[in-house]
Length: 335
Image (cartoon, rainbow, N blue to C red; front, side, top):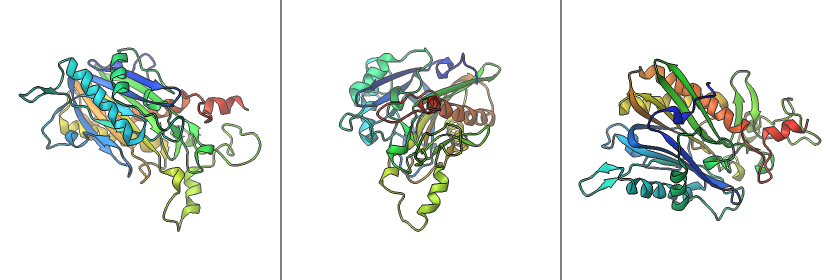
């Protein structure tokens, strides 16, 4: 990954966060007002989305004008209305003959179990995120849609670890950029693909100090799942999860190819979330391509998976302890 690059390095893209640090929720807007070819791949069994069907092949709309990522569970989809209002005021949208209608797909994550559950992202917050949008590299960790994000919840929120929002970007040659931004609120653990070890996840129930990096630090969600065999549910504490994000490139791709990039990016999610794509996760990835660079879709998809993994890892590395949920930074300091 290249530290001097971000998703905002791609021409035509701006990113803005808005959040409520008391309620511990927020939203993130990826603006592309000149339009970008959009696609989607949704793998988990518990998604919360808006305008997702419009992104599939064989549907009329080719371009999206923004993508909204938000906390607040299904209530948070209201943030997209504020994004639409902002874009309408800018004269941006799909020309219908009766006026321009902005296309703003959205996805949400569940953060009602932290902070103040009665306060969720709404149209005003979505509008504010648009006002905050810029070409500056987005803040990471406890910002925007990642404000209330957590991972490793099989043993309940009492053993979870704070996550957030993370970004990654690469120049893959000939002026072609591939980038990602992800809010990570997974049921499972975050795995470092370089060594296969748990970077963040459900913390052990053992008594006494926890030493980050030791085998006793994390309980290992997939191992714990064996004890649920024979049951019909993983329990209430597990029903509030998802990873949502956007992969973007300045390649010139059509709608089918952009959907393929979103599909291939899911490989990056599966490399560092264990387990991935469960019935209690949403795991929704949007893909956008702004053009005009010529590039093979297979190459873009391969590196989309790579930046997806790196953005997910950064989401936990950059997170800070909040709302009684420790971050891996805090756990390291307890050694």
